[in-house]
Amino acid sequence: MATMMVVSKAGSYAVYITRFKEVGLDTLSQLIQKLKNCGCPVNCIVYDPFLPWAVEVAKKFGLVSAAFFTQNCTVDNIYYHVAKGVIKLPPTQVDEEILLPGLSCTIETSDVPSFVSTPESDILVEMLVNQFSNLQKADWILINSFYELEKEDVWEMGIKAKQDEKGIVRREVIEECIKLVMEEEKGNVIRGNAKKWKELARNAMDEGGSSDKNIEEFVSKLMTIS
Image (cartoon, rainbow, N blue to C red; front, side, top):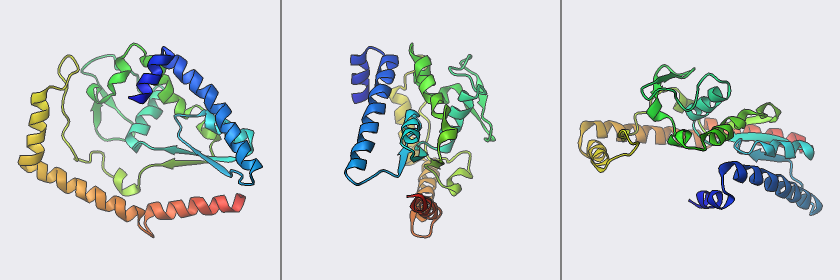
């Protein structure tokens, strides 16, 4: 909501994103220089790829950098193939199915975020694909996931509330989804799967888990260059 208010004041997403980059470049550079002058130099910049200019700041100061993708792998996969031109956004047909490389199942056009159909969709899609514009300059790529989570194409952790022809999810549809989760056998399956993924995530983060080991390895490599 706060972002939308700022965008509204800026006049458009294009103006907002351009200004955000200009201010961000300057502010981040000042912060790095200030910390250096205080005797607390920065050794590495971990940045969200939605802010690809951060890696340019890292290079400017001779720092290493790590791109941290905070969304799940499937979403990152979609954005990557949009950037490569394999997937076209917005979809050309309402009932079009999209075959995503790396997945055994297709996704429907209704699975594509609704913002790509807005008047300013071009600038939003550009922001998404720009995540990969200079990714090769990053020294590491970090993904917010763990291997066990990515073995399944479909997690079966919820029920999709489908939109009507106007793109609105009606009250009756939401009510039906809630009943399915709370009262029907399918709800037991969903809750069981959610508990399973929760336990797997906890195991990955616990001491000796896959995520814990990866973080230790990342920090150890940083220590050798600091």
